[in-house]
Image: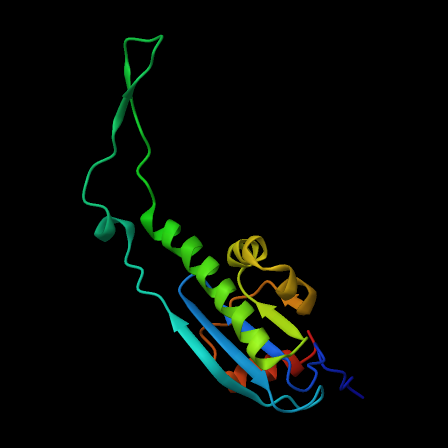
Amino acid sequence: MPNKEPYIKLPHRAVVFVGDGRKALFLLNEGDGLKPRLKVQQAFEDENPPTHEQGSDKPGRTLSGTEPNRSAMEQTDWHDVEKHKFARTVAGALDRFLRELQTEHLVIIAPPRTLADLRRSFSPTVQRSIVAELAKDLTGLTVNDISQYLVARS
């Protein structure tokens, strides 16, 4: 007989954050731990074109103080910079959202790099609210599919 224990038990009114470097969803569980009913509360999407569309100048060159040779500088990855900035913006919005809802349960679902950016940006209040973290990119799934993923055993 298959085990019906959910992968993550979501308390009633738990907030589920699903995001990556360009998109973020704040979901609220209106169900219980065994049958979550996730509803979208807020959604964010960032316009982040590739670096070659954002940067118009070629990388600079530098002169070493000890060598007569010049060396090229690496081009700034503006796309990556914007992903980090978006994670900080979303972390601040999540802090305000948790205060408004007055909830103490938060599940974070994001790819590993985004998760690392978020961890660095979370306030102590948000950090205390986290009950689970998943290093997965589920932003391409529907809300119903995210619910099913959280209920399924891995």
